[in-house]
Image (cartoon, rainbow, N blue to C red; front, side):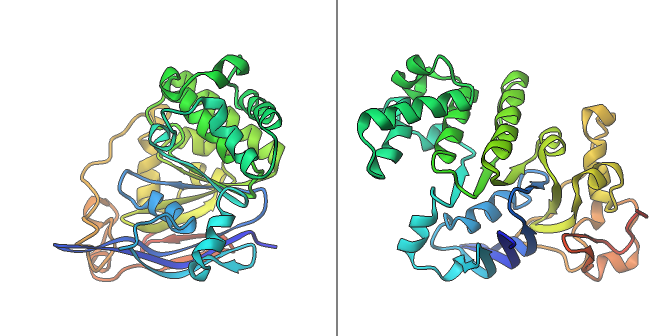
Length: 314
């Protein structure tokens, strides 16, 4: 049974200067145990999708479309039911770990309180917390458990929030920019931890990232976002070896191992989205139709397709 289905998701943010159309007609699905990566430049709408799924967007956001998790339509669930799903069935590894941790609570207790709330004794909860610290590579666990978040590096705080996210064996983990701001060593450790989680927990992972190396290493499927919409989606190996959209090809070409070729220009404002293809002004393959008509996402498989008037051959 499909674990997560997102269908025609649109998210608007009203502002004093107009409406920001942050996510446009987003559709994808995930099976149990799969890893799907949402990749693209900063501001492409990746994080909005994750927050919409777990219902952590501001109340001012206007959301349409369907989000079905394990047979339940999340957009219409009562708040108390959605609250019960968070942590137990769907967990979030936040983009800013420092903002998600209580600076006055010891690291171990930030995990242990989850088990205490579920009825465990303090000693049992503390033992489980230390086991989770070991699982994400935070050792010596006894010492780190007794310390506070400010005593950890950025990478260690990221792993601490990851341990909180996996504490209740959630079926879906949303990891929002888990390697952002980390050095090479911390990025490698985070990648290994996320890979281990998938193997050990058999959890589905929605990876939101601009780190293409991480996405290439971890993901089964890749959805490439540009200006709030999916412009290409498919198996990870296909996306990285045979990209069909000019933007996807340019994004992969900008990776250091591929020559670090910069992509000129910038994406359009989400408050003034053009009528045609959003990538037209930066695309060397555009024609007259590109500036007039928005291309449809041509589905080529259950979870694959490209949104382009002139896609490259597969």
